[in-house]
Image (cartoon, rainbow, N blue to C red):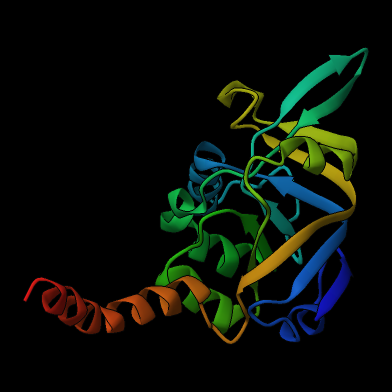
Length: 201
């Protein structure tokens, strides 16, 4: 199925998503990589407010190439970064902040998938190496926070229109495409080992 959704997302927007679906997102999304996730969790644990309300929100695992033009920023390219680096933080972010969609590349683990099942969220991938294509869907930079972390690690608040195509890889049932693919490959190992052994008989 193909879905076009607008953030902030509601439970009913996310509940219908399944692994393999194609998704386009409009509205506001926030970028956050390793350092921004670490700071978000630190703020949560210390009871400090975050600069952005992420309830129903979309987090994009990415850091931009951006240019300051007067008082405004322009995003030149913004391809996804490897999501596994955020695995240690994402379940807590989903649970405590109400995030509904994570976008990145390369997949996430069991802890995140379980949080997505429990709190009605999903994970989707954007094509790696397509940072310029991603930038074309970014209509404007609404704000940027935590620039002290560096341009790539800062939290960018972005207005997007039909950001995608995204492919759902973890859905709100907790189904995780990457885990299924790994298990399928492991199941084939005995058969492949036997075939190799037969070749050398």
